[in-house]
Image (tube, rainbow, N blue to C red; front, side, top):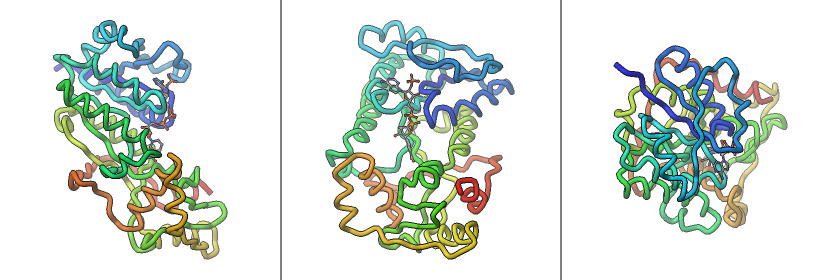
Length: 296
Ligand SMILES: NC(=O)c1ccc[n+]([C@@H]2O[C@H](COP(=O)([O-])OP(=O)(O)OC[C@H]3O[C@@H](n4cnc5c(N)ncnc54)[C@H](OP(=O)(O)O)[C@@H]3O)[C@@H](O)[C@H]2O)c1
Protein backbone atom coordinates (compact mmCIF):
# COMPACT_ATOMS: atom_id res chain seq x y z
CA UNK A 1 0.00 0.00 0.00
CA UNK A 2 1.38 3.41 -0.89
CA UNK A 3 2.18 5.78 1.93
CA UNK A 4 -0.03 8.76 2.77
CA UNK A 5 1.38 11.98 1.35
CA UNK A 6 1.00 14.75 3.93
CA UNK A 7 1.66 18.38 3.06
CA UNK A 8 2.34 20.86 5.85
CA UNK A 9 1.97 24.57 5.16
CA UNK A 10 2.96 27.11 7.84
CA UNK A 11 5.68 24.98 9.44
CA UNK A 12 7.61 27.99 10.84
CA UNK A 13 4.85 29.17 13.20
CA UNK A 14 4.03 28.25 16.80
CA UNK A 15 1.53 25.57 15.80
CA UNK A 16 3.42 24.66 12.63
CA UNK A 17 6.65 23.89 14.45
CA UNK A 18 4.75 21.88 17.09
CA UNK A 19 3.20 19.81 14.30
CA UNK A 20 6.38 19.58 12.22
CA UNK A 21 8.37 17.60 14.76
CA UNK A 22 5.99 14.60 15.21
CA UNK A 23 5.26 14.61 11.46
CA UNK A 24 9.01 14.29 10.83
CA UNK A 25 9.06 11.38 13.31
CA UNK A 26 6.19 9.69 11.44
CA UNK A 27 8.02 10.36 8.16
CA UNK A 28 11.23 8.81 9.49
CA UNK A 29 9.25 5.83 10.78
CA UNK A 30 7.92 5.34 7.23
CA UNK A 31 4.33 5.92 8.38
CA UNK A 32 3.78 8.93 6.12
CA UNK A 33 5.55 10.81 3.38
CA UNK A 34 5.89 14.40 4.62
CA UNK A 35 6.13 17.24 2.13
CA UNK A 36 6.80 20.78 3.29
CA UNK A 37 4.79 23.43 1.46
CA UNK A 38 6.29 26.87 1.71
CA UNK A 39 6.26 30.29 0.18
CA UNK A 40 9.30 31.95 -1.35
CA UNK A 41 10.14 33.85 1.86
CA UNK A 42 9.63 30.97 4.35
CA UNK A 43 12.68 30.18 6.45
CA UNK A 44 13.59 26.66 5.33
CA UNK A 45 16.50 26.51 7.78
CA UNK A 46 13.87 25.76 10.46
CA UNK A 47 13.51 22.26 9.04
CA UNK A 48 16.01 19.96 10.78
CA UNK A 49 18.78 19.12 8.33
CA UNK A 50 18.42 15.38 8.96
CA UNK A 51 14.67 15.40 8.29
CA UNK A 52 15.10 14.34 4.69
CA UNK A 53 11.77 15.79 3.56
CA UNK A 54 10.75 17.19 0.21
CA UNK A 55 10.06 20.94 0.03
CA UNK A 56 7.69 22.45 -2.48
CA UNK A 57 6.97 26.08 -3.25
CA UNK A 58 3.32 27.17 -3.41
CA UNK A 59 1.97 30.31 -5.08
CA UNK A 60 -0.71 32.12 -3.19
CA UNK A 61 -2.45 34.34 -5.70
CA UNK A 62 -4.98 33.86 -8.47
CA UNK A 63 -2.33 33.59 -11.17
CA UNK A 64 -0.49 30.89 -9.18
CA UNK A 65 -3.45 28.51 -8.76
CA UNK A 66 -2.62 26.45 -11.85
CA UNK A 67 1.03 26.00 -10.83
CA UNK A 68 0.08 25.17 -7.22
CA UNK A 69 -2.42 22.56 -8.46
CA UNK A 70 0.47 20.55 -9.88
CA UNK A 71 2.39 21.01 -6.61
CA UNK A 72 -0.40 19.67 -4.38
CA UNK A 73 -2.06 17.22 -6.79
CA UNK A 74 -0.56 14.07 -5.25
CA UNK A 75 -1.20 14.99 -1.59
CA UNK A 76 -3.64 12.92 0.48
CA UNK A 77 -3.72 15.38 3.38
CA UNK A 78 -2.84 19.06 3.57
CA UNK A 79 -2.43 20.67 6.99
CA UNK A 80 -2.31 24.43 7.16
CA UNK A 81 -1.08 26.17 10.30
CA UNK A 82 -0.78 29.70 8.95
CA UNK A 83 -1.81 32.84 10.75
CA UNK A 84 -2.26 36.56 10.03
CA UNK A 85 -2.40 37.28 6.30
CA UNK A 86 -1.95 33.57 5.70
CA UNK A 87 -5.55 32.84 6.70
CA UNK A 88 -6.98 34.66 3.67
CA UNK A 89 -4.18 33.27 1.43
CA UNK A 90 -5.58 29.80 2.03
CA UNK A 91 -8.23 30.79 -0.55
CA UNK A 92 -5.67 29.98 -3.25
CA UNK A 93 -4.62 26.78 -1.56
CA UNK A 94 -8.27 25.67 -1.53
CA UNK A 95 -8.67 26.63 -5.19
CA UNK A 96 -5.52 24.63 -5.95
CA UNK A 97 -6.94 21.60 -4.15
CA UNK A 98 -10.24 21.76 -6.05
CA UNK A 99 -10.71 18.70 -8.20
CA UNK A 100 -7.79 16.77 -6.64
CA UNK A 101 -8.29 13.05 -7.11
CA UNK A 102 -5.93 12.22 -4.26
CA UNK A 103 -6.99 14.58 -1.50
CA UNK A 104 -8.71 12.91 1.46
CA UNK A 105 -8.83 16.00 3.64
CA UNK A 106 -7.61 19.55 3.98
CA UNK A 107 -7.08 20.74 7.56
CA UNK A 108 -7.30 24.53 7.41
CA UNK A 109 -5.72 26.71 10.05
CA UNK A 110 -8.42 26.87 12.70
CA UNK A 111 -7.16 25.61 16.06
CA UNK A 112 -9.67 27.76 17.90
CA UNK A 113 -12.85 27.19 19.91
CA UNK A 114 -16.41 26.74 18.58
CA UNK A 115 -17.33 30.35 17.98
CA UNK A 116 -21.01 31.27 17.63
CA UNK A 117 -22.65 33.08 14.69
CA UNK A 118 -23.07 36.15 16.90
CA UNK A 119 -19.38 36.15 17.74
CA UNK A 120 -18.44 35.88 14.06
CA UNK A 121 -20.40 39.10 13.54
CA UNK A 122 -18.48 40.94 16.27
CA UNK A 123 -16.20 43.40 14.40
CA UNK A 124 -13.17 42.67 16.58
CA UNK A 125 -13.51 38.94 15.78
CA UNK A 126 -13.42 39.47 12.00
CA UNK A 127 -10.09 37.58 11.68
CA UNK A 128 -11.80 34.55 13.22
CA UNK A 129 -14.70 34.84 10.76
CA UNK A 130 -12.14 34.71 7.92
CA UNK A 131 -11.37 31.14 8.96
CA UNK A 132 -15.02 30.21 8.42
CA UNK A 133 -14.95 31.82 4.96
CA UNK A 134 -12.16 29.41 4.01
CA UNK A 135 -14.18 26.40 5.16
CA UNK A 136 -17.22 27.73 3.31
CA UNK A 137 -15.22 28.11 0.10
CA UNK A 138 -13.81 24.59 0.51
CA UNK A 139 -17.35 23.21 0.83
CA UNK A 140 -18.48 25.12 -2.25
CA UNK A 141 -15.56 23.69 -4.24
CA UNK A 142 -16.08 20.15 -2.87
CA UNK A 143 -12.72 20.13 -1.15
CA UNK A 144 -13.01 17.76 1.86
CA UNK A 145 -12.03 19.46 5.09
CA UNK A 146 -11.43 18.70 8.75
CA UNK A 147 -11.88 21.59 11.17
CA UNK A 148 -9.71 21.06 14.21
CA UNK A 149 -10.94 22.84 17.32
CA UNK A 150 -8.91 22.99 20.50
CA UNK A 151 -8.92 24.61 23.91
CA UNK A 152 -6.42 27.27 24.81
CA UNK A 153 -2.83 26.24 24.13
CA UNK A 154 -0.72 25.54 27.23
CA UNK A 155 1.82 28.09 25.98
CA UNK A 156 -0.84 30.80 25.77
CA UNK A 157 -2.54 30.01 29.08
CA UNK A 158 0.52 29.33 31.22
CA UNK A 159 3.26 31.10 29.29
CA UNK A 160 1.68 34.18 27.71
CA UNK A 161 -0.94 34.78 30.49
CA UNK A 162 -3.58 35.03 27.76
CA UNK A 163 -6.44 34.52 30.26
CA UNK A 164 -4.86 36.62 33.02
CA UNK A 165 -3.62 33.65 35.02
CA UNK A 166 0.00 34.23 36.04
CA UNK A 167 1.79 31.12 37.24
CA UNK A 168 4.96 32.92 38.35
CA UNK A 169 3.02 35.43 40.45
CA UNK A 170 0.72 32.67 41.71
CA UNK A 171 -2.51 34.31 40.52
CA UNK A 172 -5.56 32.75 38.85
CA UNK A 173 -8.08 34.98 37.12
CA UNK A 174 -11.65 33.64 36.99
CA UNK A 175 -14.82 34.73 35.21
CA UNK A 176 -18.26 33.79 36.59
CA UNK A 177 -18.21 30.12 37.72
CA UNK A 178 -14.77 29.25 36.37
CA UNK A 179 -13.68 27.81 39.72
CA UNK A 180 -16.15 24.96 39.39
CA UNK A 181 -16.03 24.51 35.59
CA UNK A 182 -13.34 22.97 33.39
CA UNK A 183 -10.98 24.87 31.15
CA UNK A 184 -10.02 23.05 27.96
CA UNK A 185 -6.25 23.22 27.51
CA UNK A 186 -4.49 21.76 24.50
CA UNK A 187 -0.77 21.27 24.91
CA UNK A 188 1.09 21.98 21.69
CA UNK A 189 2.91 18.67 22.15
CA UNK A 190 -0.39 16.79 22.21
CA UNK A 191 -1.81 18.69 19.23
CA UNK A 192 1.24 17.82 17.13
CA UNK A 193 1.20 14.18 18.23
CA UNK A 194 -2.55 13.84 17.66
CA UNK A 195 -2.40 15.32 14.16
CA UNK A 196 0.56 13.11 13.24
CA UNK A 197 -1.57 10.08 14.19
CA UNK A 198 -4.88 11.23 12.70
CA UNK A 199 -3.44 12.01 9.27
CA UNK A 200 -2.51 8.35 8.94
CA UNK A 201 -6.25 7.51 8.62
CA UNK A 202 -7.57 10.63 6.91
CA UNK A 203 -10.91 9.17 5.83
CA UNK A 204 -11.85 8.89 9.53
CA UNK A 205 -11.64 12.66 9.99
CA UNK A 206 -12.66 13.94 6.54
CA UNK A 207 -15.64 16.30 6.43
CA UNK A 208 -15.81 16.55 10.20
CA UNK A 209 -15.21 19.06 12.94
CA UNK A 210 -13.23 17.55 15.78
CA UNK A 211 -11.92 18.80 19.11
CA UNK A 212 -8.52 17.98 20.57
CA UNK A 213 -7.51 18.79 24.11
CA UNK A 214 -5.54 16.91 26.74
CA UNK A 215 -6.30 18.82 29.95
CA UNK A 216 -9.65 19.85 31.41
CA UNK A 217 -9.01 21.06 34.97
CA UNK A 218 -11.59 23.06 36.88
CA UNK A 219 -10.56 26.53 38.00
CA UNK A 220 -10.20 25.16 41.52
CA UNK A 221 -7.86 22.43 40.25
CA UNK A 222 -5.77 25.11 38.56
CA UNK A 223 -5.69 27.11 41.83
CA UNK A 224 -4.61 23.95 43.68
CA UNK A 225 -1.88 23.15 41.14
CA UNK A 226 -0.43 26.70 41.33
CA UNK A 227 -0.63 26.67 45.14
CA UNK A 228 1.23 23.37 45.27
CA UNK A 229 3.92 24.33 42.78
CA UNK A 230 4.48 27.76 44.39
CA UNK A 231 4.22 26.34 47.90
CA UNK A 232 1.68 28.97 49.03
CA UNK A 233 -2.04 29.58 48.38
CA UNK A 234 -2.66 31.05 44.94
CA UNK A 235 -4.52 34.36 44.74
CA UNK A 236 -7.91 34.19 43.00
CA UNK A 237 -8.85 37.36 41.12
CA UNK A 238 -12.24 38.03 39.57
CA UNK A 239 -12.47 38.95 35.90
CA UNK A 240 -15.45 41.31 35.97
CA UNK A 241 -18.38 41.79 33.59
CA UNK A 242 -17.07 45.30 32.98
CA UNK A 243 -13.73 43.96 31.75
CA UNK A 244 -15.53 41.37 29.64
CA UNK A 245 -17.45 44.17 27.88
CA UNK A 246 -14.34 46.34 27.46
CA UNK A 247 -12.40 43.43 26.00
CA UNK A 248 -14.86 43.07 23.10
CA UNK A 249 -13.24 46.06 21.36
CA UNK A 250 -9.96 44.49 20.22
CA UNK A 251 -9.23 41.15 18.59
CA UNK A 252 -6.91 39.43 21.08
CA UNK A 253 -8.76 40.60 24.23
CA UNK A 254 -12.06 39.59 22.55
CA UNK A 255 -10.69 36.12 21.76
CA UNK A 256 -9.49 35.76 25.35
CA UNK A 257 -12.88 36.99 26.65
CA UNK A 258 -14.63 34.41 24.46
CA UNK A 259 -12.55 31.60 25.96
CA UNK A 260 -13.05 32.94 29.50
CA UNK A 261 -16.81 32.94 28.87
CA UNK A 262 -16.79 29.32 27.74
CA UNK A 263 -14.82 28.33 30.83
CA UNK A 264 -16.92 30.39 33.24
CA UNK A 265 -20.27 29.19 31.86
CA UNK A 266 -19.30 25.69 30.73
CA UNK A 267 -20.74 26.41 27.25
CA UNK A 268 -18.17 25.21 24.74
CA UNK A 269 -20.50 24.36 21.85
CA UNK A 270 -22.06 26.62 19.24
CA UNK A 271 -25.36 26.33 17.36
CA UNK A 272 -23.92 23.47 15.26
CA UNK A 273 -24.19 21.21 18.31
CA UNK A 274 -21.66 19.14 20.15
CA UNK A 275 -18.31 18.65 18.50
CA UNK A 276 -16.71 15.22 18.80
CA UNK A 277 -13.71 15.09 21.13
CA UNK A 278 -11.26 12.75 19.51
CA UNK A 279 -9.06 10.71 21.82
CA UNK A 280 -5.71 9.80 20.38
CA UNK A 281 -4.02 6.82 21.94
CA UNK A 282 -0.39 6.56 22.93
CA UNK A 283 0.23 10.12 24.12
CA UNK A 284 2.35 10.29 27.24
CA UNK A 285 1.64 13.70 28.68
CA UNK A 286 2.60 15.40 31.93
CA UNK A 287 0.32 15.90 34.91
CA UNK A 288 -1.17 19.38 35.30
CA UNK A 289 1.25 20.05 38.14
CA UNK A 290 4.25 19.06 36.03
CA UNK A 291 2.98 21.25 33.23
CA UNK A 292 2.54 24.25 35.56
CA UNK A 293 6.00 23.63 37.02
CA UNK A 294 7.52 23.82 33.54
CA UNK A 295 6.08 27.34 33.12
CA UNK A 296 6.98 28.55 36.62
N1 LIG B 1 -6.16 28.05 20.69
C1 LIG B 1 -5.13 28.82 20.94
O1 LIG B 1 -4.75 29.02 22.12
C2 LIG B 1 -4.36 29.45 19.80
C3 LIG B 1 -3.26 30.24 20.10
C4 LIG B 1 -2.51 30.76 19.04
C5 LIG B 1 -2.87 30.53 17.73
N2 LIG B 1 -3.98 29.79 17.46
C6 LIG B 1 -4.34 29.53 16.04
O2 LIG B 1 -3.37 28.65 15.48
C7 LIG B 1 -3.13 28.98 14.11
C8 LIG B 1 -1.63 29.20 13.89
O3 LIG B 1 -1.20 30.28 14.70
P1 LIG B 1 0.33 30.47 15.14
O4 LIG B 1 0.30 31.19 16.45
O5 LIG B 1 1.04 29.17 15.04
O6 LIG B 1 0.85 31.46 14.02
P2 LIG B 1 2.31 32.08 13.90
O7 LIG B 1 3.24 31.53 14.89
O8 LIG B 1 2.11 33.55 13.81
O9 LIG B 1 2.77 31.49 12.48
C9 LIG B 1 2.49 32.12 11.34
C10 LIG B 1 2.65 31.17 10.17
O10 LIG B 1 1.82 31.68 9.13
C11 LIG B 1 2.57 31.88 7.98
N3 LIG B 1 2.15 33.13 7.35
C12 LIG B 1 2.08 34.36 7.92
N4 LIG B 1 1.63 35.25 7.01
C13 LIG B 1 1.39 34.55 5.89
C14 LIG B 1 0.89 34.91 4.60
N5 LIG B 1 0.52 36.16 4.30
N6 LIG B 1 0.76 33.94 3.69
C15 LIG B 1 1.12 32.67 3.98
N7 LIG B 1 1.60 32.27 5.16
C16 LIG B 1 1.73 33.21 6.11
C17 LIG B 1 4.04 31.96 8.39
O11 LIG B 1 4.77 31.42 7.34
P3 LIG B 1 6.16 31.99 6.79
O12 LIG B 1 7.22 31.23 7.48
O13 LIG B 1 6.10 31.72 5.33
O14 LIG B 1 6.21 33.46 7.13
C18 LIG B 1 4.07 31.10 9.65
O15 LIG B 1 4.39 29.77 9.35
C19 LIG B 1 -3.98 30.22 13.81
O16 LIG B 1 -5.17 29.78 13.17
C20 LIG B 1 -4.28 30.77 15.17
O17 LIG B 1 -5.49 31.51 15.23
C21 LIG B 1 -4.71 29.24 18.46
